[in-house]
Length: 126
Image (cartoon, rainbow, N blue to C red; front, side, top):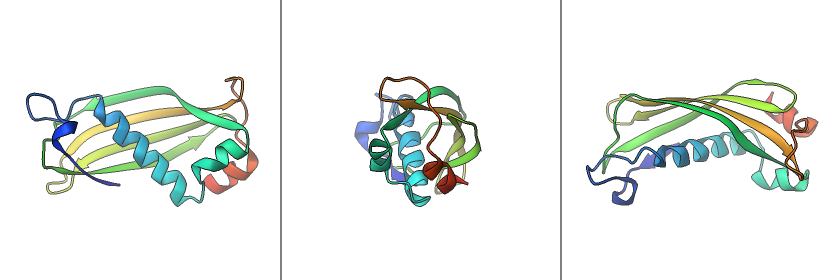
């Protein structure tokens, strides 16, 4: 996913505010799922949702106002109720690594209890 950095993404120093990267990572994961044929509305139809269970981010270099970044999402593995992603953000112009992240999502039922990932969705991710 390609993303242009705007002024509202930055702090007083002109660099991307660290919390904004969570939005970019979420957008990249959503695009990954859509690319696999999983419309986010399918989760609601199947009466389950997913939430971030764990997020580990290592910041390597700042992105700045005016930069274009490339955000990716790679599914490493699936368990009964969890998805494990490895994600990176790089500067488009230089290829410089901005950050690395490991994100774990958990599948939840309507009562917010862990629940197995529906087979229809699991098969699309395989």
